[in-house]
Image (tube, rainbow, N blue to C red; front, side):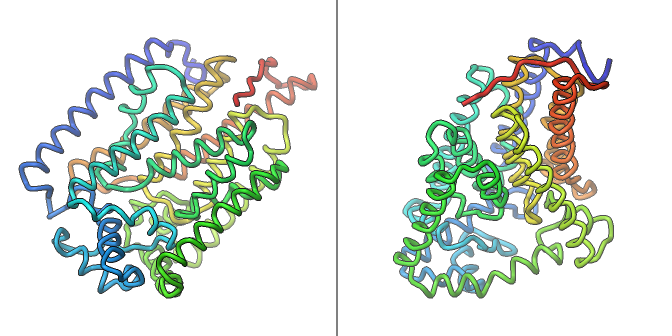
Length: 412
């Protein structure tokens, strides 16, 4: 009964999602009101959209003609100081990200923040709506906790979801344009490590070549705009990102990788890297095996995105917004062909797990440490896709234990 969940009809799912969306919207409205009354600051001097400040400060330095100083922490901190009351928001992004940051400081911080979040959130909503193609997509978006986590943090996950969703979504129909779009992930390359592997395995050479042209063009453009010294400074400061990861300076509970989970359980940095490396290698093997099977386009795209999230050791809570893509792709697929065993449960767990993180962070309960949900949820979702593919292949060959053959849709 639990694995099939026949009581969870589409109508009831919409009702539950509407209730969750209402609660989250009201809760977020309350938070924004508190921020407004406190001049944009929350408890412990937390700045609304604090991560966005690192982008805005980078723009301030670029517009002043000192792009390379973005990668000098002491000087970047000075650019943040007018708004940052405590700590430091580091800038570890490669120089192509500076192209996106360039115009941000043309407006005051809070104006720029709301415009940035509004524009990128709109692109995210369009991508999800084009997958689900139903007005209820908006309800699903409003009921998904990472939407609020990313917005409050002022991060760029709306943008990365839009790039991956759009690029992977059109690679069968428009391979060159898909490559150009996927190449934009050079602004955050550690979240797209599985994409070139997938393109090679599936023989999508045109997409791979145009992704290379796109990313290389952005690298060259950033060098022309900001100077070679900017790249040298970036390479020089990159070791700090590794140290921040290893030492938990970001907070292991905020990270969502296998590496972070191992560190939280007491493993040393070296041991955690080994554990993560084995998990990443296993994920790559699963990715290659799945892509060599006859699977639907929705499953293909989903396994690529899941691999991107599991392979990297540096993924934060707001990056889990990317899970909206496999959720949307597989939901649309299964609404057409029927839900396999355990699928409703896995979709529900994937959708609701971020709530475990959301509430303690939102209310800033110091006594409650947020629980990292990323790696377990990603592994669970991968298990479901592998299981369903195995069951379908067994049924197609008439083997015992195979499920009934279901029609496959090829979404393009």
